[in-house]
Length: 159
Image 1: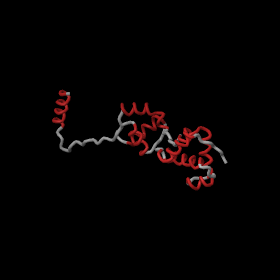
Image 2: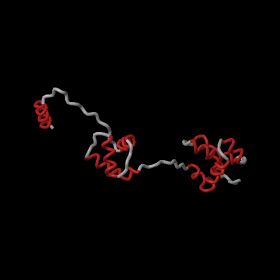
Image 3: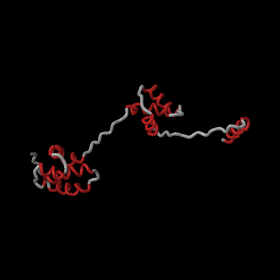
Image 4: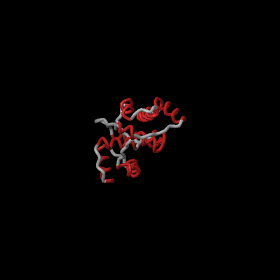
């Protein structure tokens, strides 16, 4: 059983943050500290807080190690894609050579980096780069090529 002592200002912070901290898992940790300040056993604290006895011990060791600041720290696991290492070169390439489909982008990414990803992952990656799917218009079946050339010349001369 770990014996910890709390200063008066820490007890005030604990009492406030057990209901008002923005992260629920930190609220639970602080609740365990508050129950410990009431001199309850680890078993009682575990029952009241809805955690395991080992978790109570872990939270108290966190407090003992670094105080309330250590208890407030939350390190969520956020995996990072291997493509992140190549983000600048891929972004530059795709800006200079836009792809017409996700399948083409998959092939280019594999060719440039050696990393193979599925369609959904490539789509998310390209969205992260700020690129998005664009719909392309179709040319009507009975279009007049001469009128199109004339229109292109007018558009270029006005620009």
